Length: 324
Image (tube, rainbow, N blue to C red; front, side):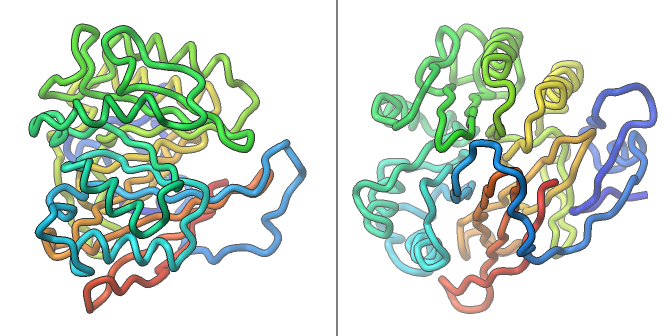
């Protein structure tokens, strides 16, 4: 059996989520419970009030080079930003890593959405390699709604914030405890302890956690492409298992990531992994550019998936996933 986007999986052995670098190894560790077909937004999603106001937010990932100054055209990130504005830019945007040059990305976001539009960053491997952390760290001081800064040596690149009764956690997987710009991702003990404390202090809320790399690489929802099978969180298998168990035990709705340049979604042991793919336009021609619009309504949540088609800057709503 091959695991594909839209599947819910569980582990046959024990209570931990399936983790594996290769898709075949990943598939061998899980059993299919039920496949989730493409779902349209349900009119009946307005459930019992849980103190959560109507909330929409945008997620995109992996835009590096598409926001270079010489690519200030609709072919590249400005076309994505215009499509986001047209679809409904929501309350804020989360860019899930590999977003350099971030200063130019900020300029393009403000040009499309307005100077006051908030956006939050996640550190990606290319942001570390290309030495763009200094600008991101300086921006961390101005992020709205931040309620907790990260552990020692990651105070600017790991953080959590609240908005309309929902709790959001951003983790830097390139933090080792000693520095926040390591070459390889991991959920190190210091980061795990910080996350455990943060989630424990926000029980009863809807929670989303953001990090750059997935726990496992899942095929693209459209063409089945699999990438980064050996470069994801499962590189440190025990830490990845422990991380996913924590998300499950603390009732996290979804872990949202990028890194692979492929869009996918799957549910492991009660927690969704949503991979936002890339928003790089023609610089990445083997999968379509993608952005996601999350809609939170009381006790219901869905994700609208927009992917590019044909001409540059032309995005279409492909599907809506209900996160139950």
